[in-house]
Length: 326
Image 1 (cartoon, rainbow, N blue to C red):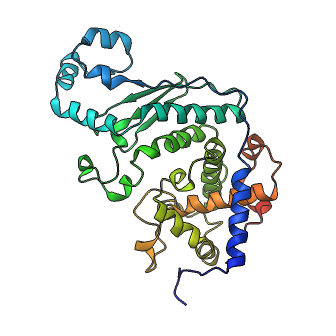
Image 2: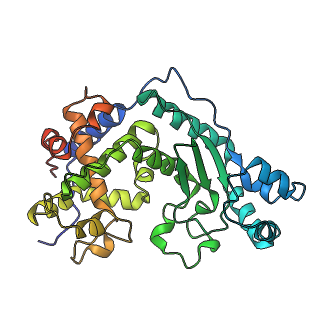
């Protein structure tokens, strides 16, 4: 029997699966009574490339932005027509009022679960494509988030020529808020340094994805995974087969560090070392960890999110009773 063949579900099972997923999604539908302060993202590059803004006044307003760049290099960059064009192309792709509203909603949900969270100031900027691989920077100490808008110019944008296609899947304007949610979630999840098995990696990433569910209850799941919709559908359709592969090959409790490279880290596909690899979605370990955590909340719906984050991977796995079936 060929590995990872597509499974055809009966009408009854499909209805049950949809109903179960809907119940899980509704778990994070909450009433926000104390919304965050309205976000007004500041476009630093708009001022940087403006002819009527002097370098001195710009530096005085954003003293932390220059870093180690000399005034001479700074002046050259401001006068670089190609850099200015990249910025204009990038900012034209973004609906800033909508972005402000979505970030406000995101921060409101974070505050709901973590009342001590202080909504950060948001700054947009252009790295002229230099920072597209890591376009979100969060500095909790300074309470600032920086968004490199050249990292979200749209898949197959001419400016991304030469960049691996699998990176471009999540370089669309609609990926900004989910990526911000991911960066924020990472600050609430402590890795378990005492346990380094594959199940620990699965649950660690599953916790981050669960926080994204709580922070962005109205966003599509595929965006939270940095997937295309097709990649997400593949992972859902093959969830049983992925899990069976992990179990049958004794990977769940393995301490093989190569499993991170195969199933956790970004890439064009996951590495099962079978004929299906090129068709598979990447990072299926994160996807499975997320499904285990979803199943945990189906079994333990009254668990507080903050308490859930303190539970170790083994216990979450045991209490989830995760056994996906066709």
